[in-house]
Image (cartoon, rainbow, N blue to C red; front, side, top):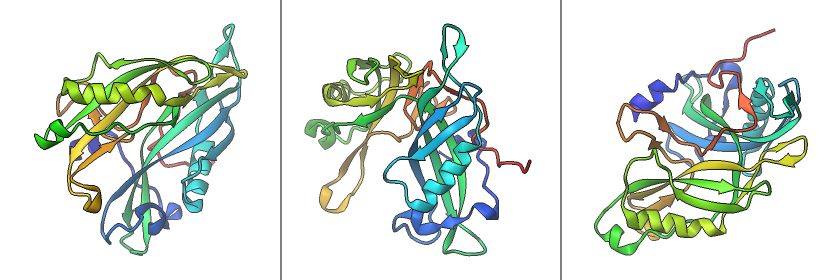
Length: 257
């Protein structure tokens, strides 16, 4: 996994971006490196600047403030209507890494690892880890392609053709759960955009106290689109051909104007 982090071009932010460690760590032990993903509702103006960026519920206030400021400085390519750029509503998912500051262990240095635009899951049903598969200790990342309409309803879900092979029973568990999912679509000039969203669901074996020895994790979870350790690695859901595209490097530190 260390190679994946190196490939992302991760950069720690300056001391001015230090956040309270508890905002991101959620009880992690001192010295732990913690990763969290947060989503923001973003409106991109026709000129590609951010009109508004609001972190969704679940982001601690200090994290929300940091994300809204950071995403608000990025440039995007908006969607278009009849070839002309138009105001676009999109979801920006941002994956952060926090590690205790060497100067102040109560605070964290924060790095943006990756960011993605597009539709986002709104309501989800976590698949059940099939008991027979769990008893055999079988793990895997099931990557599915989900077609949605302009209102975010699921039209079709299928195994993503570029994902590595995985146990068919795990695949079926995920596909069966997708019927109850809904999504927040992108909107261009107010019109909802149909899309295909690539969604990973990871089945892992580990101790979770009273919850038992298995876990099912919907995004973010790390998966490969090639099946090779040195291949392309992702952790977020990905909208294929999103209406809004991020032009800025999300891992770069902001520069003073």
